[in-house]
Image 1 (cartoon, rainbow, N blue to C red):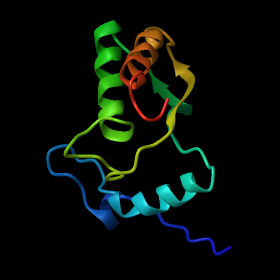
Image 2 (image 1 turned 30 degrees about the vertical axis):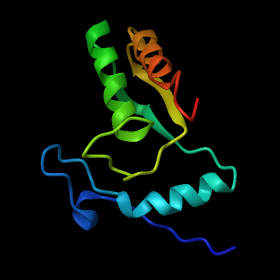
Image 3 (image 1 turned 90 degrees about the vertical axis):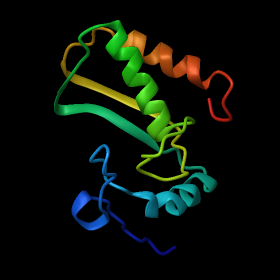
Image 4 (image 1 turned 60 degrees about the vertical axis):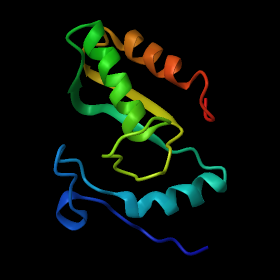
Length: 118
């Protein structure tokens, strides 16, 4: 199998003017190909050097809606991966506080309840 490494960054791919997010829509077909082969693709939030958290439940819920619309089953004019729908969210909360993540997760679950992907 041929492996093609594609990357996406604002310099090479441009951005959505209203948000500054990189336009990685060229990866949509690659994402679909991987998913068709049984691979699960997620967006990861956090990491070893990331210090992420929420100031309150409403911010966590709002961020859940944003992630849903940008990367999962929702809709937005600024979807970084175009029409590709990722399979989920990896929460790698090593720095910062874990407070209000329940609200974030519950919002994603609420939005995905009637979606094609669970």
